[in-house]
Image 1: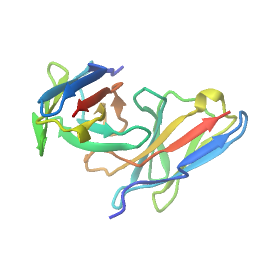
Image 2: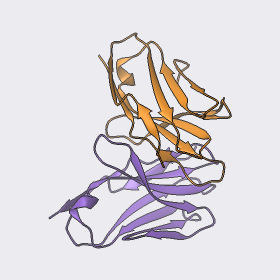
Image 3: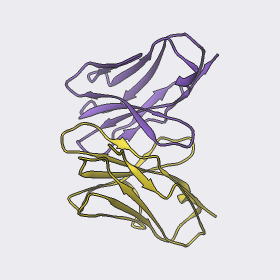
Image 4: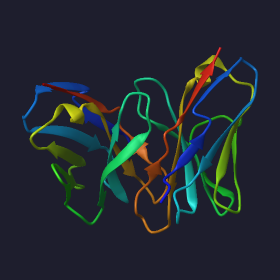
Length: 111
Length: 112
């Protein structure tokens, strides 16, 4: 059974810092991995999608890496801003169907 | 281009009642998945519909059922509501090309 773990559960940093969020998964047989952002009480916004054959994806200040062999992904956020405050969720797709989510990392950027 | 839409936004029901939630997928998507998200938790997969058939199901009881229409929109039905069914219900759409899943704003269900 695929399990996804995100560490830390919560993170608070001052504005302007670069930071890394971690995601690990137990079964390396994944179809792809997605990082999402969720604002309180809202739906999920897709940030980055990494196919199983890829090593990383970049979008603006965000960079996500994938190491299937070790079952790890990281989301790097450069020059953090207060607007980046949200919960970040990592999810893997064991087949081309359902997503298996971690519990999320609640990020707070302090002005 | 409209993204994934869900209705209603909020819903309050009493234990034992039945509820229907609705979802319209993103344009060009033919697959709809439903997830339940309890407070402070990651979303849990309920089921997925493709070509009007349930393609995969998560670990949810038969009280949870669904339907997909020819226009790819979908409904989630929950019968005999329990207090523990209170959650944010998320709909996600995707296509068969492996482009990831895209989520709607969710329906907040409160069971009293």
